[in-house]
Image (cartoon, rainbow, N blue to C red; front, side, top):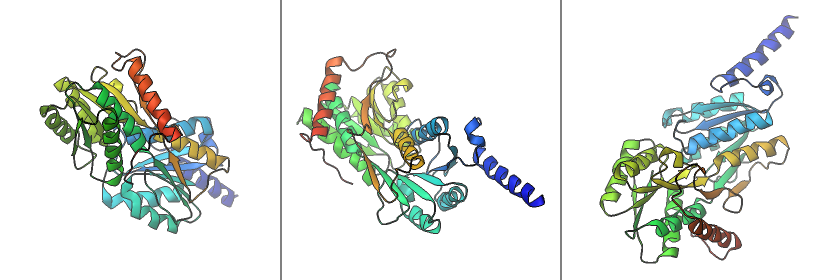
Length: 333
């Protein structure tokens, strides 16, 4: 009797651990056999971009697949990356890992937990059997953003504010420049790297610098730092292009569109495959335009239209040409 009681208490403790910080309890979350998923983010929620999109994917899986989920935030503190991964591994069947910052530590931790599955978002690791990677073709989506910027600019000068000067952000940059040049070979494209992904004020300073140089539309690929870019667009009465999620709602009179990177969709689809035994550990899953992994979004119908139907049709045509291979978008990853 005591052993049975102890076992029940242990199961309850595991469930309580998972439910802390995960919002309201759904009926599925009381199922001890449900798939348990830990989402570890290098930064923190509330960026209205990359990390929030991952959380939306987790919540979608909680609602539609009945999984149990927990988010562990590292708040860009490198000293806790490994500890948070270990904690997630101890209480999860699957660990979703968000951020290039985990490249080394995830390989170390995954080898310590060979029976757990890891989904590494936004980078590629090969040769570790229990790590599957999701790689986005942000260069393809950024090509569309660059083409749109080139069609919207009145000064012939467009800009981009990136977070850190790292390969994934360079992939945004090279696609953005290629798309702009495809529309207008003489266009001027200026990029500033803010140096981090967590300081909106720094992003605002970078954007205002570009606007002062005659740039009239800026694409931001800078996480929480990018919130400052969007604020600068509003303050300077200029234009901006959002990233990762549809950010038009933040300032619908200044944000013309967003290059969506469907982190939420890719996480949901991956967890669905795991439930259906169709997910291959060790594989790299690619999400480009063809897979609906990157695309342009123009806000809701009740917002002021800043991109006309003719321009949207041209962007759609470019998407089709990228899918068919008629347009080959350069990449740096």
